Length: 141
Figure 1 (spheres, rainbow, N blue to C red):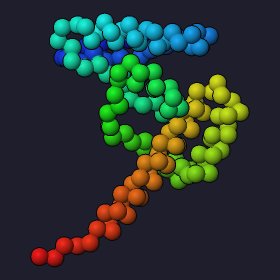
Figure 2 (tube, helix red, strand yellow):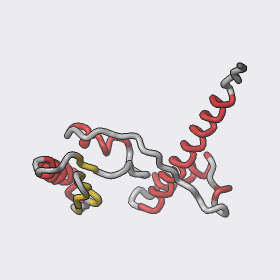
Figure 3 (cartoon, rainbow, N blue to C red):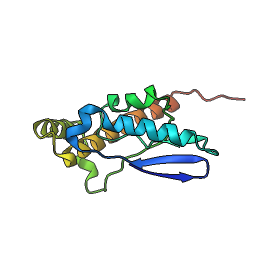
Figure 4 (cartoon, rainbow, N blue to C red):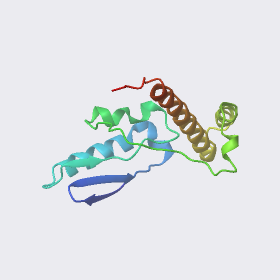
């Protein structure tokens, strides 16, 4: 685990363990101990445990919430190079998801699938926001 402190915030920036030990919840135990010790330090008012992973299912962060961490909304965006942007579609996402399912150990495919999902979700929410903004009637004075 790699941490650092900046002002009153302790940041957990990286954590890894061998895949064979993941089922033993080793990362959870280490995170709990480090979080507990960091929170007890004088002058520490906040613990930051990183942004949402692009390729992790939602249940991966559940243990953080059980330890008292709270999710705070932040604005994240995935932007593809203009040459690749036309390839971002529901179809490419489905293909990427199927390839990931066939080869679950391929981290590159998992990240690509996550990035496509994230980008498509962003596009959909932007469209919804634009529609709701466009639907607001003009107020005449």
